Length: 138
Image (cartoon, rainbow, N blue to C red):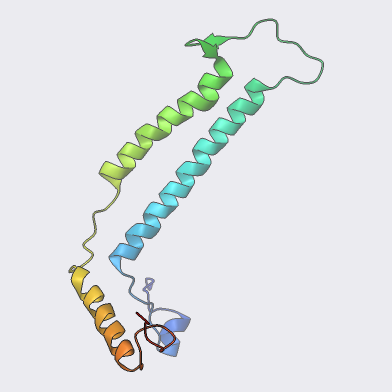
């Protein structure tokens, strides 16, 4: 009995291996999946409650509107409750679930220095100072 490995099957026969993904990419993909799933869950909850409790079939009248915390119940359970729940989930997601990945060394000033050097080199090849190469008249 053989077990599956990343290089088993057709890729192993062809001499290929699966690429090793960066852990930052894997964490970002996992977090994206969680965000999309949570969005769908809370969106379906809100739309379903507002649709089924907020609308009556044609010709039907509601004798009395049920009230929760001073607002119609369908507004509370279809809008307020999902928003409060998603706030709690967002705090959990941001402070507990998300991974704090090491992005490597900071190269903040180096990119700017390279751009300035490239700009000076490109200006040095022109006969003037302006973009058209005619110089500035003062």
